[in-house]
Structure formats: structure tokens, C-alpha cells
Image 1 (cartoon, protein in one colour):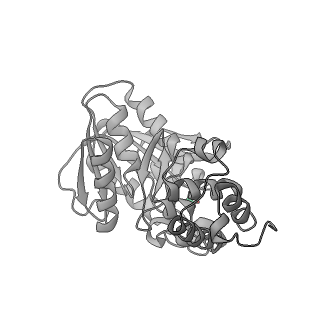
Image 2 (cartoon, rainbow, N blue to C red):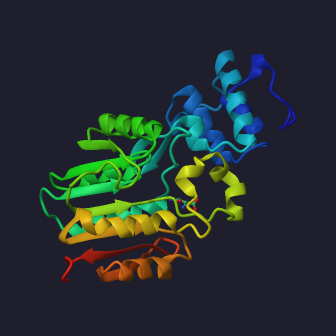
Length: 286
Ligand code: GLN
């Protein structure tokens, strides 16, 4: 059989299905999608290349490969993505969790340094990746996660339930519905892409919710709203930690300084880019 010819139904085995798929999409993606259709471990694809694929599975696989070929993110096709060692359910209502955002988890854990019972707020939780991870990694925290999107909150709640994390969810447009709550730590991975950024037209982001990505002409509108509102929701000595764009660290440190934060700093992601910034609220007199 020529590699890019579609295998005949009576001869479709794992090897020929993968050989066909890899002429259209990345081999890693081809494997992930086949594992999803067959609901099997990676080892089965390697150990049993001659194993036949049932007709309906082959049809389902072809459909997935075509959708991937048209650009749909693998995470949406299989409905999940790994974050900080756990599988999170994702739908097109939420941003696909990024490895970059694991930096915020490390920073949050580091800043609370093993303290028990801390109160944590995750603003714009999306899939719940940050809130759920912190709820599971910290010692008896009280975690509240908010999002303005009801569809996102459904996904986040499902993830908390599936992973056994205790998180309270609030539908709120930033501080709008939050009330008088006070926190030891606020984390946020808000929308921070500039409206005209050409990378919105490329790759996976084309399929992600615009409202979770884009934030005004410079991408700074939501970061600004969060920095401005955070002091009223932080205890004295509390921390605000935010992810931001590769070129926004200086601007975000400026916002934090203007709002009166102390101990302002930025931290680099795995690629060596300043990807998160934060500061400590020491109170109005601080
Ligand atoms: N890091 C994402 C991207 O560049 C954006 C995530 C966000 O806006 N919070 O695609």
C-alpha cells in the first residue's frame, strides 16, 4: 500500500492507520488521537502494530485526523490536557492549559512556603488548572476560583470533582461578584494578548475562546483591572501573582508599583522569558 493512500477497510491495522495519518498530521498527534479512539495505552500501539482496527474506530479516527489536519487543537479533540502532572478536561469554552503556567503554581507554592490553611483566589480560572492544582498541592488551603464564563465554570467544576479538589466557584467578572473576601494570595492567568497580535491567527489559539486571550490594544486591560482591584482583596502581607505576555513584564511591574505593591518581581518561564510578575500588599501604609 502506498503510504498516503487510505487503507482498505479489511486491512486496517494500527501500523497502516498511523502510516496514513502521518502523511497528514504530526506523528505524535497521530498517536495521541489513535490512543484516544482505541482508549488504549501508548504501549499497545508499539507492541501490536498488526492489530486490526474495527470499522467504526477507523471511521472515527479518520474524522479526528481530518479535524486535526484542519487545525483543531489535539487537546480539544481528545478533551483533555495534562497540567502539573494531572489530566484536566478541556472544551473549547476554556483555554488549553500551557506548561508556562506551571510557573505560577511553583511561585504560589513558594510564596506560601508550606503554610497551612491559606486563602487563595484564582481569577479567570478557565479549566480550573491553577485552582485545582493549588488546592491539591497546598496544605489545607481554602481556594476560591472565579470566571465570568458559565461554560468555563462547568469545566472547572468537573475538573475539581474528578480530581478530588476542594474549590469554591463563583461566577464573576473579575472583582464584580466577590464581596468583602480577603485572601493571602491571588493568582491569575488573565487574557493578555493584544487585540491585533498576528499570533491569534496561527495554530491552536484560533480555536481558543477569544475572551480568554485578548485584552485590549496592548493586552494589558485585564492585568490592569486585576492589579487595581487586588489590594482591597488581599490581607496585609498578601501576594498577587500574575502570568503575562513575553514583552509585558516592565509594564506589569509598573502597574504594581503604581498601585502601591512592595517586593515587586518578575520570574522567567522555561524558555527564559519573564512570564510572571507579582508583588506583596503591605497595607495602605506599606
Ligand atoms: N500564553 C497564551 C498565548 O500566548 C495566552 C494566554 C493568555 O492570554 N492568558 O497563546
